Picture (tube, one colour):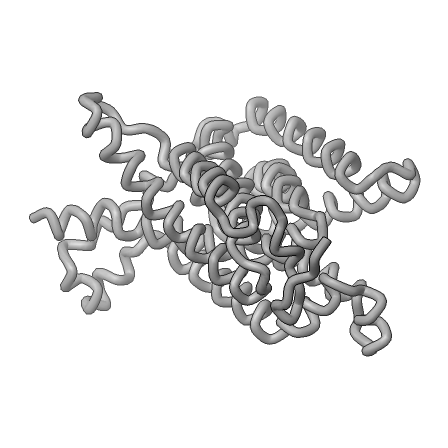
Length: 316
């Protein structure tokens, strides 16, 4: 009975949360080292007006219109950040702060004043997602994993996150050498003939795709946390780029699984009758892991130098 309940109520949310964490953590490693970690934060905020506009135009809450609207909003935000940075001559972080705050506020206003607030698309959904509601009604037990009829009843968010995570992993794997070189030394990358600007735009586009796919299922809180916390914690554990990515994926999966379990069962263990937000608990776990890495990680004081492409350390 417990196995059947787990498969029906928890398996799909756990898988979706883990896939969303992996999809965000992979590009997050490169964005962190490029000092562009806030791009993930910005994207997770700016997709909201695109999603609302897509709903108003299509009249329904469906994956394809929402993805197109969110993707368009993400691209608009990237252009606005670049325009503000160049015309206003301010640092990228300030430009990102202006854009994602304004667009998220505009999205909230659109959401509250439109018919979208009458469906499950509301401000709470935008922040926390709907991870707890992504249950597998046809998951009668572990045998359902081999039942084609039951598999068709899986939440569509699972397939969406699986495809996006695979695409992000393929992008990272196929362009690994070029991404690493351009991240650590743009000048050297240009001498090798690598299209540095194209790589940078492609990385941002992949990050936007991951954020958009994860937004509907897990909300903006987890997206922000997964772009920044696992890569930051991983950087405190090793001075090898490959090792950093591996550590970040481990931290991301642990955060998603442990956070979901603690959200559901933690309050019960403490004597409370109701669960807490899975998104909030997952984000909290990522923060705790980062704090532990900062206190106990081998590179916590920077004595081991800086991360390098070849894995050797450079003493400061």
